[in-house]
Amino acid sequence: MEGEIHNFIKVWILANVSLCYCFYIASRIPKGITRFISLLPIFYQFIILPLNLHSVILCGLTTFFLVWLGNFKLLLFSVDLGPLSPPPPTLFQFISIGCLPIQIKQNPPQESPQNTNPPQQTTQNPTRSENAVVQTVTNVPKNSLTLAIKALLFDLVIRSFEYKQHLHPYVISALYYCLMYLALEIVLALGATPARAFFRFELEPQFNKPHLSTSLQDFWSRRWNIMVTKILRPSMYYPVRRICTPILGPRSARNLAVMSTFTVSGLMHEVIYYYLTRVPPTWEVTWFFVLHGMSMVIEVEVKKAAVNRWRLHRLVSGPSTLVFLVVTANWLFFPQQLRNGIYIKAANEHAIVQDFVKSHLPLHIIGRKGS
Image (cartoon, rainbow, N blue to C red; front, side, top):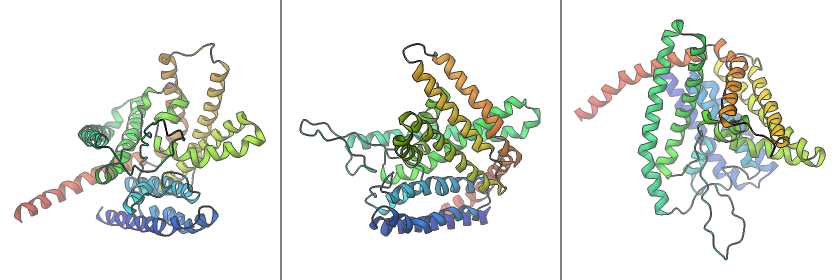
């Protein structure tokens, strides 16, 4: 455990050094192909760094933050788009936005009769009112309590796997969903903590009550893993739609952009699975996202055709959406994880981490008291 933690620290030191290069050198290079070429060593660095880790938890976290989000943010940065453009005023803000799963909340500009120009997006708030700071500070206890509750639920779900042989398969499937959701919530919340603590950033939420989704479009576009959605839109959806519209027309271009975005998401999940298991991909998770992309295209087309005619009540559309998600996830999303024992490894690592903390924390406290 100690050796893996040391490797984890080394990986993130190198990641921070790489982002220092991006801040001091790449940001001074004109956007476009020249800046993209200057970032190629960093793309490669981010790809190979997680290979130094073998823990499911630490490797999965690093792969998601660097290989997926980090590289996509830098790809957008190379063309002067995304959360890193324009570059934040300080290095620490640049590093936080570059390697953490955060999206800074955009404050609407103050309206005035003299200002009729459209609002411009910024990656940070150079000036902040006292009310915003007070609101951020008062939200900290609430956020901490929510995170503590989720951490407790996560621990209970992990422990319930010890009685797996006595549980119904449907109950076990439900536990897998809860474990994945809680793990993502906790990891993303912890990743956002430094930005809130040091810079008082007002951040967009990572999830928006996905269990209340009333459609696939609602689930994927507005409720589930919003950070990834905000990265995939400018990097995949908008470029594909813009390029294809003159050729295919707006309707076909939109549908192709949706399919392209879901396919890329599926491929990135295959990459994460490879880092976690180190076995060749089976492409099941890619087909999961392709299926959902196709289903969302059909859903949107049906909505447009049925507008002002009929509409499903949310008491029907909500459960139907969740059932479709559960059935397709059992079929294509989870099998690869279960075959390679990812959840079992994660549960074992969770127990090791708890033992590691228990064995070191008392010594630390005793040392402080003695001093």
